[in-house]
Length: 246
Image 1 (cartoon, rainbow, N blue to C red):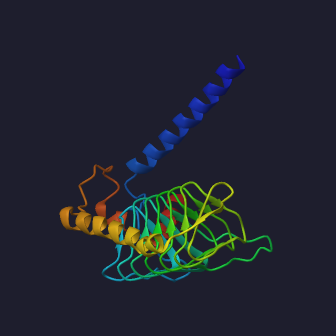
Image 2 (cartoon, helix red, strand yellow; image 1 turned 30 degrees about the vertical axis):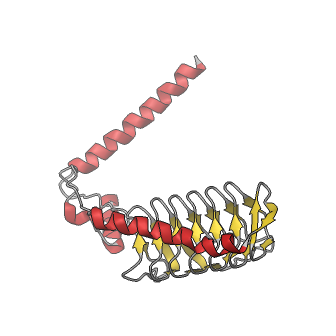
Image 3 (cartoon, rainbow, N blue to C red; image 1 turned 120 degrees about the vertical axis):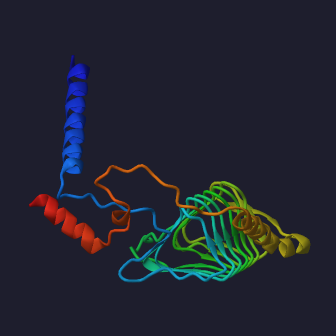
C-alpha cells in the first residue's frame, strides 16, 4: 500500500509538470529560450583561448580561464574548467575522450593552477585536479591525479592509476597502481618514444577533421521555440523568464 501511494504521488507530480510545460508552449506571448551546447564557455567575462590549428570535439567544453596551445586536441565529452585557477595546456598535447580537468582545493582550501606541458598524451577517462604535468608525459586511461601532484618531464603513468595528493613522479620513471607506486625506470628508448603517443593521436584527429563535416542537422522543435531562440543571450533569457512570471 505504501509503495502504491508513493507511485501515485510521483505520477501526479509528473502529470502536473507536463501540463505546465504544455501550457507554456501553447501560450502566444511566452517563449522558452534554450541553448545548444557551447564548446567555449565564458566565465566572469573570460573566454577560453585556442588557436586555429587546435581541435576541440563539438561535445566538449572549455570553461573560463583555459588556454589551449597550438596543435593540441581535445577529444569527445571532455570538460576543462578554469573557474578558480588558470588551466594552461601546452603545444601538441592530446587530451582524450571523457577527460575531466577541474580545480579542487587542497587540505588548506587553496586552489592550485593546472599546468600541462608540450607533447603530453592524456588517455580517455582521466581526472586531473590541481596538478602539474611536465613535457612529454603519458597518462594512461582511467587514471586519477589529485591536488598538488607533479609529473616531471618524460614520466609515465599506467592505466587506472590513482596518484595521491602531493606526490611527485620523477622524470624518466613509470608508475602504476592504486595507490600509484614506482614500477621501473624507463629506458632511453622508452623515454624518447613518449611524445610519439601524442603525435599518433593528433594524426588520428587530423584524419577525422579531413573526412567528416560537422553539420547542424534540422531538429523538430515545438512551434513556439524558434531557431533564433536557440541562440538566446543571457539578457534575452532573463527577459523571457520575467515575462513568464508576470
